[in-house]
Image (cartoon, rainbow, N blue to C red; front, top):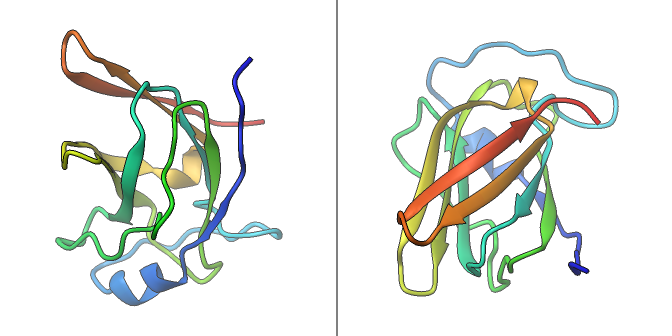
Length: 132
């Protein structure tokens, strides 16, 4: 049985970063339209997590701070309700500095992202879901 822990990461800093052309989205009552749950279905512990608007060249701050995102864990990513960007990039980094990136995620249409890693191929994939 997989152990799951929940952490809330607040994305207030992203509103300051998202200064390029942003598309308007509707805001849902209990948070921003971009909120989603990230699941680590890999066998890798990630020490860094970055999420930034696709229009931005910089990743910004590591959202994990001093914590690690371990295999089998999930975390709720919560955006500031004023955030307007729809398309986002996601990056995770392990202890060795190896990283996986996903570009152009339309977070207004995604509620869950499950990360997978095929060690033999050296390839990361993300399963995207919309809905409960």
